[in-house]
Image (tube, rainbow, N blue to C red; front, side, top):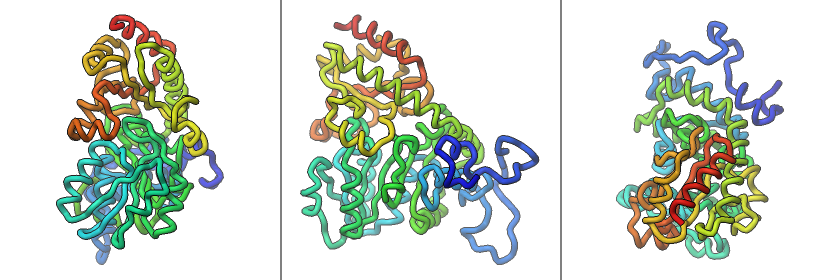
Length: 387
């Protein structure tokens, strides 16, 4: 069966796999070799070499990831930030300007405000709720627009179709971090985005045991990023490739559970008197629900909420919970809980966090694969100890 005729769950298992399994192995072997034979005259970027991200383990992943989002090409990297930073450094040069959504992951925000700024690459941030104002931010040297499918940590969902229309109208390269949604819930290239980024550390691998990233999209752009990455050296090692490929095969069934369990927990929290606000686009009362329902196939396993009181109560709740582990990252089989003000967005000043709507009592939860009723029971007992 041709890949394009397969449904997503089938693609996750079969897309990109060798037509003739190596040595008859059902699972892709790990090619633990840094160097491969090359014929005389092979160009530098075509040499098979781990740092060039093109060993057999890499090639299978590239084909599979491209197929998942119905894109022309894909590339794996050493981390999600390697995917984002290498792409921005490839597509923007000193003197260029680009636009970005006004609520982004803290690491991306720091890279934009500090590293790119030091290279003479400037950025203006857009009010995602007011597309009619975006044109005012354009400059003659504006080259790209950057957004996130579901933002970290407030779970905002912008009108991504408007982003595509705007990018096409003004000749901008459109880039999106699709980590929180995963290809199960959203496939940016299908909508017209030029590049889609993932921290494969999260949902794509799903087991909290590797760090990896991916760039997916238009072939000529992915190829340009690959050449830059070849020089910067952000390659993924073969064993991590193996683990990522293994994790991808269960993504569909894992995301179905993440989606369902997060909705259950969000509904419980939204009805609890100790909770002031829940950010989850699956809730009908959420301000992003209508947009998310139109764009997404599911609302993912990420949610955040503000507890009544302040940071002291937030810390007390995290300590009183028994199932969620207090740790950064997300998308694993175990539920994880953090306070963004002290983790993912600690690099922002208190004033910057307040301006972005990230309060000190905001708690972010990555809902894992535990039974949802057990998670609800745990949150109920922990909240009962504090209030």
